[in-house]
Each structure stands twice: as C-alpha cells, then as structure tokens.
Length: 193
Image (cartoon, rainbow, N blue to C red; front, side, top):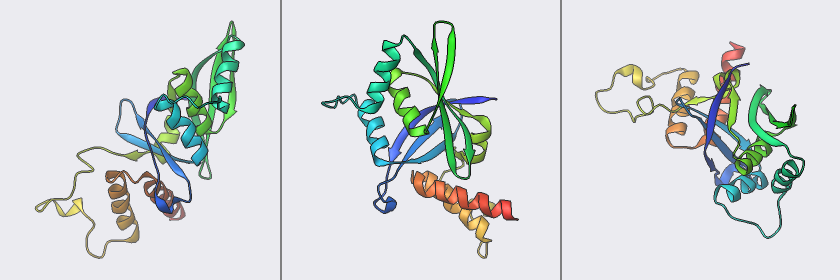
C-alpha cells in the first residue's frame, strides 16, 4: 500500500457544528487537504499538545505515550489507511526490540499520539485520492473579471457543477467542515450516476 506523508494544518470549528471540529491534514509534498471530523475532546487533546500546554493531570494520550516508554517501545508512525462509508480508519505502528506491531485507532486518537511522540503521519494514497480536497493557490484564486468562462459556474450550471464551485470556495475560505460535507455529497452524486 502506498502512503503519503501529511502534517497537521489546523483544527477548525463552526457554531453550527454541534461541538465537532475538523482536523485538517495537508500533504507534505502536495496541495491536497484532508479534513476529518473529530470530537471536541479529541480536538482539545491535539491542541493542548500542539500548544505545549501541560494539563494538571495526564490525559489518556499522555498515559499511552508513557506506557510506550515504560515498555521500551517506540511509535514509528501513524497511518490513516482506510475510508469506509464516511469513516476513517487509522493504525498506530510501533516497534520494540525485534518486534513490530500496530494498534487499531480512531484517526483523532492516533494523531493525538503522533503529536506527543513526534511520529510522522501518513495517509494511504487511495484515501487521499478519495477524500482529499485540492488547495492549489492557482486553482483556488478568486474569480476575476476577464477569467475564462469555464473558471466559474455558468448560469444554469448543473447542481453538480454548482456544488463543485461551492467546494472550491469552502476550501478557499478554510471552512473544512463544509468542504467535507460537500465532498461527500459530490461523491454520492457521482457514484449514483
């Protein structure tokens, strides 16, 4: 399986999200973004470590890091290796002496461990192909007067064309939660046709 390295681009939320956050991962050597919807507690766990804020008591992910250390194991990397029915799947891959292993994890928990152990994060190429959103500056530039007509949805454009335009705008506005919803709806529409 081919993997693409990603970094954390950010965490975002919106008042209408019902407490959910979008964890946004970006290709290290590319232009795609991968928004993953996560809960508030997981977002807090990631944000605290990114900001180097020490809570008064260890959080669950701190406990896991300490457990790896005590057992003499090292987190090698985190992989988001599957996407099925809108749910992302991840693994924490680790090594100890001559043993290698992996633990099934939610992507939010795996990323929270990655930021605590300085482990690289990878996404399976097929997952990024399916759910990644392009964020190329040229492609995402605002439409200017004189742009070619194909650069903007035409009057009377199909619903799919309008949604693709809305998706580009959502990425440009860094509204990754909306972008993820639009991406999923576009995928559903194109699969049905």
